[in-house]
Length: 589
Image (tube, rainbow, N blue to C red):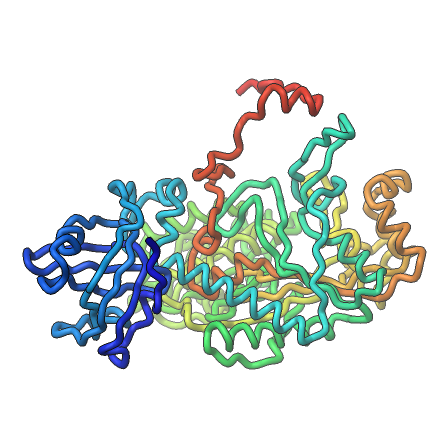
């Protein structure tokens, strides 16, 4: 028997008093007081209290007494005003007096509590995710994600974008991370790759005349995991023909303004601020700066030039940098013990030590006090704009080390000091990224990808040998210190594309093997085009104030890239492997 419901469990209000209703859901809690049985019934919208008294048939009353957590039930009844109201839930002014009930299925004792404040171990949550998802919070998160996706589809449809699906089984190509490889049964010894992004196919769509493309695209990268990274993730993927940087930014600001209004109820101002990559690194030590608080990096090379302190002078002589940050009220807040902990943390970013100077009521104290006079330390404090009660933290090393260490430290300290307001949304465009970077071996790599267009007024740098200072028409959208998405104007000129490949050390044969189909397409009238991709999981996570994208993905992988629900990955059968021509060789530990 199935009761056709009239309302969801979170919908009823005092205005429904006297209505006959049918609710379906799960038992969140059951309390038997003899003649009265109180049952909280839950679905994805919320909870309603159902009361069984002696007016119901005896068999229904006994059935109500047998209810346990997570039984799946249907209830018929009449809405009444509660005598003791519960202000903690939207339905707290009413209850449903039951007239009939059906038990659809019973539940064993659940291995986890189905409530938002359960504090259960994350591994158990993921193993029993189908129970974890019954929580009101998780259902709210999934519904919120749905609304963001719907908003994207509606907005970009209105802006003339066409949603097109691109292939999942593609050719392995270098995009910065390891590919997930899929063997072909039909073509023995050959492999597909799962796409790290739809990059080349969306560029082909521009060549095809699609003009404006969007896709809610599944992407795959075989890389180490962290809170905001999964082996499979979702992008809001976009591309526009006959568009430049300003065109892309204008359209995306309209989208983000719409999302914030529709799903958060917040009006945000546009246009967003823009900052070059060089300025972001110089001021914040990060290409995704959090601008909700005013702690910036200060270059101290001139202050310490010829100071006689070997750690500083040797670093400067080797072409390094010395930078600091001023922390308001830091003198009192950061004890030696707390500074030691911060020192340990910045070492992960290459800093050998964290130096500090405090301006306290009884004078100046410093970890380098025995190497400098109070007047010299005061000059450093003044350079950093420090006032009484402030602290200055200093890192000496290569430019990368000082940027990375202090970029991390400024945000870490802001968190400790309560300066990160989750209700503040600081959107920012970071533009003009370097075209190239070098890896640890000194090999030149594309910072974004090899199809990114360089700044056309800087192309002379390709011929004068100054290629490392060449900037790209690339841009990232940043929110509160997190990169929401990134993109670029693409190269559509086949000769310029060929030159980029040469700079990256790719032979003509390698280019054909890796990118031949795209190079071929560019022979037939490729339009100027540009695009961007958002990390959907990351965007939803930030707007919900969650700390991990696992909280906004229905069935995420754990930190070992495993699915605890279905226990993937798993061994393949001997027959499957033989059919694919694959032999598994166990690697030594």
